[in-house]
Image 1 (cartoon, rainbow, N blue to C red):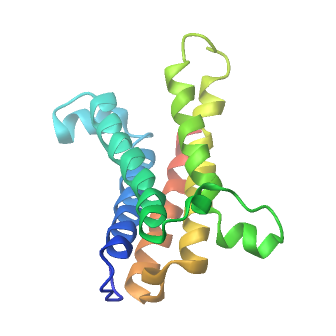
Image 2 (image 1 turned 135 degrees about the vertical axis):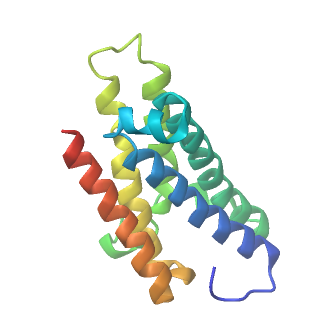
Length: 165
């Protein structure tokens, strides 16, 4: 977090967004390294992956909830699809829904065995939306260190996706 604010809701929302993206990115980056995760952490891959994923689901959920409470306005949950520039600036709104749909893919794994990976793969789309949203309107992305760190994290997510396939 780089820009100081006196509003605690804003500070909590920004921290939740940054740390949530970090946790989800780590969960995604770990996916091609199943054996190595066991060696490094001494725990099964899924235990480590799900720990990061749980934090990565909780914190991005706290981001708009905190903003809605601070502004006393639930509109932060309503996606805006037009104009195109506004859609991308507010891409965090559909990201929240994509996160939960991707999570539902895991929960429905045994009921949709042929498709659960595709549904769960929406997590990559959610991370894309989140990083674009952060780049366009994220206060902390104005700091070059934060900008480089989070865009590099997303590049590593893309690399892990390609490596896994």
